[in-house]
Image (cartoon, rainbow, N blue to C red; front, side, top):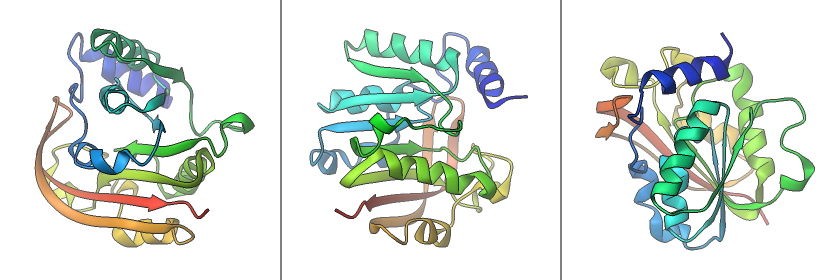
Length: 209
């Protein structure tokens, strides 16, 4: 089953509900002041729009990419309901030749919230795409699960190798300035998809000028 089919099925099965809710991820939302340092943002694997719409509400010029047509349609409805303008694109961020040259070095912020749908063999490519999209001096913000999440089973991938450790992110962004890297636990409530005690990791890294 392709990633597009897999995710469209999950989002469609949620019906009128939003699988991960309509409120922004807490790690992202708690950095609202930091986001004021930029004007443009891209949310990758954006799902049903909860994070991209919130970013637009902070006054940023927002683009969102998502592989699932079902999710993009729901995200558009969410944005319209909140009277927010977000540029939604249905695209596979791992597709050959993506991103196009015109999007390289374009965004002050590139945001990836729970994008652990690939294993180590594709993770380098995924991070490289995000790095290409970020302008010099811009930042990547990541939120993910650590391997301890498998003890809680309150969301996230079943493949433990998809999850992040601090060492994973330090190695992947060794050529960037890691401004924040925090591993912690929290009780989260993000729709029916993420609910309960969770083992989390968050990172903010700045691209060299």
